[in-house]
Length: 242
Image (cartoon, rainbow, N blue to C red):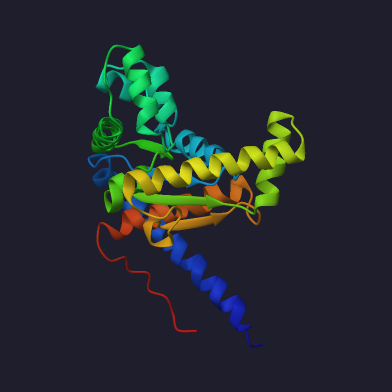
């Protein structure tokens, strides 16, 4: 009986995945001497990107860096965390920083924060073994990151999640969502001179409306395996012709 073409394609893909896993298992000792992966997770508010980033960090035993970057940047710049928090993933008017600087008896420029952010992210990435959530890490590291992920979802789904999490009205959730989206978008434009969410800046874009967190984790892990294998040279899968 003739096997349908769809089933042949599925069988071929499964064979490729299994070959990939065997390849990585065979090179276990070689991998042990190499830096652990660096993953960046960019996300739309309410899409579940934070959960994905934390889950990947736990599954791979990697360091998770989200809001914890604020403390590191504050230490780097010798500023209070409250000032750094005001700049976190936001486009802030320089005049507001002048006022904050006067109150803290120190002048502080936005560019100082941007440079400190780049220094801290780059230094952590150089050690390897870290998952970055947001903060433009995918643009700071570029192709030096092992895997750059982006999590998206429709506005309706994201607003519902924010509504449930904050226990606010639907209208309030939409307002919160719009403010977060605006702040993050302006932050990326201001700091990196890029439009947020550009596909060419990511290795994989995941739609949280169609994929559960578990699905996204498994797909991300498979993409990571593929990226790591590709960096070590061509993989022989020996697939038969359909």
